[in-house]
Length: 298
Image 1: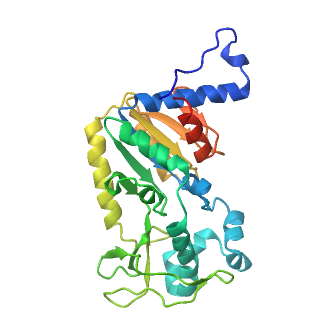
Image 2: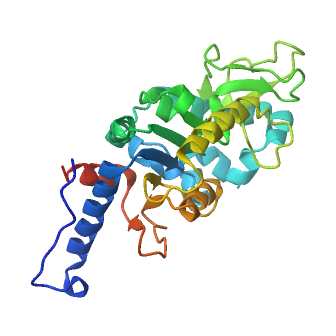
Image 3: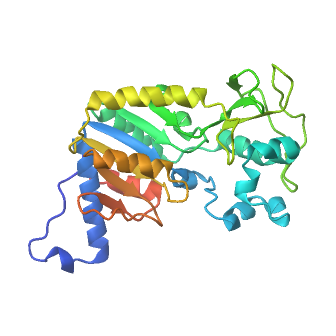
């Protein structure tokens, strides 16, 4: 797989060109993955950008995708609330229904396949920790029992009031969205128990009604798997953190906890890569480019 880290005895590292230092980092990252006993993939919104998915990093990006919400100056934090489904259900489902249809049709980029192959090659296997609700890892062929979605999944539904504590598949709901006005045109999905408005089974802002049962079960599987790796990872466990920013810190906090236990960290982030520790690797690249360039060291 990867070649040894690039060495040039005639030129001190401090004098190497910037692009050569990046190549050193890519080679070192590839070597870490090649030697990993277990691989942990920690993914934020930046992981899906190369598949054509927006990460809603800023209101400007959000409003470019949803101009009708820009006209009302509705921020992402206001659109992505449980109360929005009670106060403006057609608009709330216009937003989430459009996302659901996008997630159903988009193809995961090639980087997903590389991560899957590396994880399956590790003797201790792999696990995915993601804040994304798009189901891209499942669509890319990752084992469902090896994925923890800490914010839930848009591919599941629940009652807005969580009347019976049930979660069901969204597969039977096909949103018909007026994209120009961000409004659902067909019938609202309903709770089979009480008939109330159904909502996505995702953790929203100011959300006291989110049913975390499915995510809790995923977390239990992750916890049991981590226990098999031991309390001290000592470099045998490698965390590949991809596209996880500081704005929603759950993924970074998880990576840093494993880092404090001795896991090696490879952080891929186009804008916020700095890990501030020499023994770990930062790659200021997009997800697909970084993963494909790492693969080239074989």
